[in-house]
Image 1 (cartoon, rainbow, N blue to C red):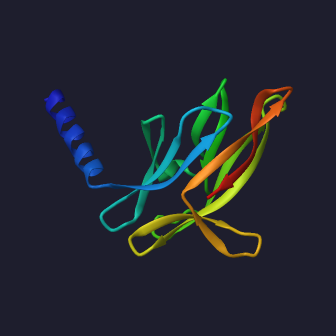
Image 2 (cartoon, helix red, strand yellow):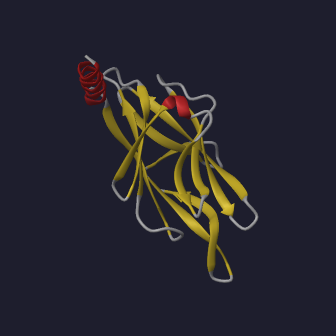
Length: 162
């Protein structure tokens, strides 16, 4: 009986995951770490956001939207959170603002924020930054420029998007 229940729960969970669609949002690279960080949104059959799947070097990690208010750690190094994605006002139906908090200086434990948004247009979802002129611009790639002291990487200096 116990094993039957576990098998039913597994197949129920698997069928829920199978009905979700993975939408690529953006890729992040850096001269501070190797590899590519891929950030994807998962949506249901009605294009409603259900969570994120992030992957570093093809190792995928699914995360529910429930984790957004407290933050989703996308990348850790030497025991420190290097990049954390969060939002207090994300709407699964339409999107909303997101903050990528990144380690600026690991020696002083100082962090900075990169603000952007996800927006739904019909069945599509896109990541946007707001330009200095106030006009939103779509992006699909992000570069995290290393912050170095005496030639050693101690954090992320700035983030640029394309």
